[in-house]
Length: 390
Picture 1 (tube, rainbow, N blue to C red):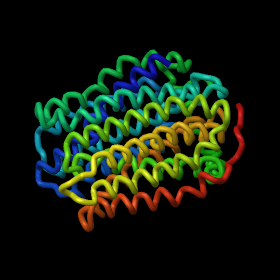
Picture 2 (tube, helix red, strand yellow; picture 1 turned 180 degrees about the horizontal axis):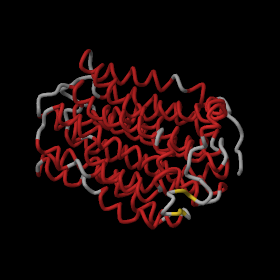
Picture 3 (cartoon, rainbow, N blue to C red; picture 1 turned 90 degrees about the vertical axis):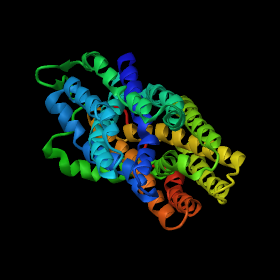
């Protein structure tokens, strides 16, 4: 776990550094709201397309090589963005970073399930979530301010932090009992099932994995929209930084604490209140920025906090539900499906809200996002398959 948590913190630090600043870099080069929204959209499209391949890459090449390559692809291109602020250049390197991010996310969430027994998955996912969220708590809200005060190069330098995580990859591989030469885990726990089980995997996805993925998509759409566009839709820079601090802080706390509660009381009872928090938070955010020249700061801060609570809590609960729906040897597949939901939602929030804001306004775009999140409420009220132990 220490190796996993350290490389996760390094990887997500670099990811968070550019999440709001790369779109701002595109705006500086002349892109509009729709163009800037494509920056994170391209990154996360590449992430989603990569995630489905990761279990087989782990099976063939092993954790050390695959995860090391992912961290290199995520952190390596950061300083190269300084060469140009033109949208095409930024999108190209966003795609490369997205491939690296896809590798990191699937490998990390599969590994955390393998390192602890199922009865403690909620708490372990909470610790893993804290390693993701705490660096973002500091770096995400500070990045727009740092880019303005000290220059974009300082933020792009922070974007190289994933390279430090490469140091911990061999230790994690040893903890997973991996044969370094064959690239296969002794129990194939991180590998996807073989080709002969493709039909059975398809039959399991709708009842076991589709529901948590769609719930996650609804809340990450909201989070992705606020993280990407908060620096652009607020007329008060301090409100932007404060709102991002609140969103990341409440997400970190919620993701950490809800895991232990889910271990004790079950995940299902916490789902629908968090979906409602998402919808209310987006509606309040739309009201707060209705006047583009006079942001209602307190209302915006409350909105960001509400979305943050749901954003962190539903990440934990939906991953827990995904892992409980499959056998141990399918954790890699469950991790890939969960991460596709996470990043597809974040990317959709960036692209959809950017397009709607360019055509209408940011308040209208946020209300549409609230409606899409509300559509997932029936999934939160129902109960999926019970917890399956290996």
